[in-house]
Image 1 (cartoon, rainbow, N blue to C red):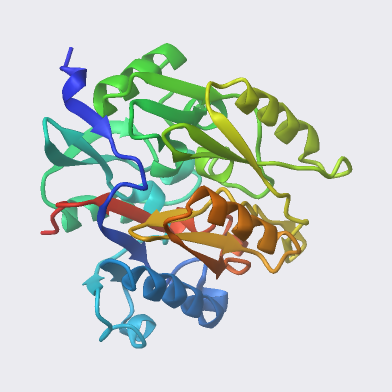
Image 2: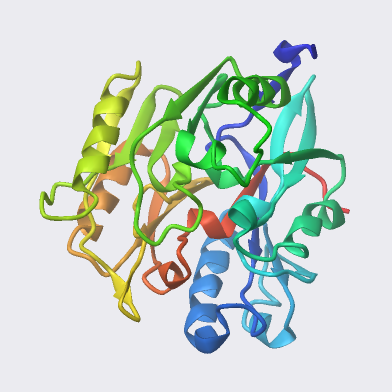
Length: 327
């Protein structure tokens, strides 16, 4: 067995080298309303670039015309199927004091969608890449930087990810690969419209080594109430401080319920980008994050259009720790 003490999965609030984005393009599911979406991705990129470099991957020159000359924007023209960097991006660990970008298989959340181009991106962009023949998405795990990783049984045990692995084998695999001391499996909670089979980054997240936030639901008439209440009960039994994020009223597009969550925030150097949804709870959510991250600026990003494609702010981004190197 590998020496686990040498490995550690970074926490998101540790110092970063850059954040990766993949801008939507006309040959994707975003094509029908691309003009509405590009400004949202510009907003994300511009706010990141105020604090640190942002790698903007793109396919169509027109999509980056408004940001191409901005400081801290690094443009990379590459092919992709979609925009969800969180799930096809590299998962970065510290191994014996050095940075390693781990490149896992991304199979479109259990073969739901073609991901052949997405799956090649990490190897094309980064140095010091180590590839694994194992399906793992960045949005399915969350680290406190001190050996504890959160995940969900619905996602990691889904039959089209790693069907030959048991829960115990996946637990050991994550410990071996990521240097984890403990894997916490969340067994309850979901959001309608979420294609990922309940990624942890839509439900429960660390905000520091000892604090967890979770997406709560206080509407007893909502379809999510029982599952999220059961998840809340799980979270409250964990040996961490827990903070509830306010519920978001039902959001729809083309008569489809969309997965809106405040847990899908992004921590960067000096700031936290928080998804908002033109909802009455937005202000309360921003206030909670202000208390949780008193030394960082809190920036709301309107993600009410991004959730049309069943993800949000964190899903669109992937951060890389200091000294990560591009090719």
